Image (cartoon, rainbow, N blue to C red; front, side):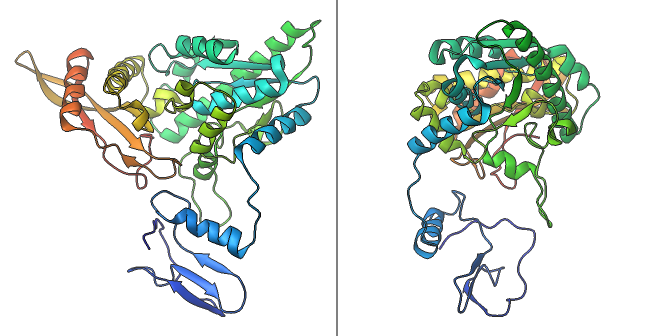
Length: 403
């Protein structure tokens, strides 16, 4: 049986009362079972797509061994979650939601809209590191397809000022996460004041985020030697006051779902297929697609390169075959030749992956001719670039984003 293993340690001694049921070339106890009791242990990942029969293994354990009932469905989850949200939020409280235009925040917004109607307020914060024309496109799309009025807050200069001199990726994520909450708290006050003496009058008590289960896994270190892989701004990047239960209360209806399940939920809610299949875009935006300090010039270069790349992917009819794609920027410079002169420019790193759960991913197998065409356009059209490369590393060991 082919399985996926990715650990820095392994079981070196069999516990008393257990026997071996699976081995690999370098892991003598990849699977163990108690000789008398229904207790099993494995040291590989059945939950990821790199283990082809992982779902069969999990089904055998949950249904055959544990005798769990198979009564969960997305339609029942949808109805139950809407009812749960109505009860949790109550009849008067209002909710402010972080909406980026990605499938996670879009589905989360639709869910809240169904649950509490106009007491949900969708807000997109322009952090200065969005994709080209992103804010306007998201505002128009949500209004057209979901009937959601989106408020766009231009805080680009505040974010760029906060990122000055910051190179470490974790610091980028934390600064962005903290500033996001500051801005949403300011918006909550504005919304409350505007709602006074109206049918929607009430305190903004809740803050919606489109956190998914992979975000939680990568951000939180549990008891023992488990490690934080990277802090997602909407999990480990939250300010301490929110972690301590002060201010806005967090509401994350998608927290236990994977990406493919969120897309299924979106279809269940009637979200347009273009929105359901839209590639994910991280909350910290282009900031974590720039290796090194974030500056307006570097954002411009990464933004323009990304726009060319994604546009060409769409024109080639490849967009829906790819789970996520983007162009990142390495702030090291490579030597090139422009107009018979020596030229030093930034390095653009193209990334495109295929995955269902976003826990593991494989690089998309582009035709070399296509990549050459993308490279030629970026170097010729984006000032400041001298080299374009394609990242062919799987996840793991790499992550999908650069930082």
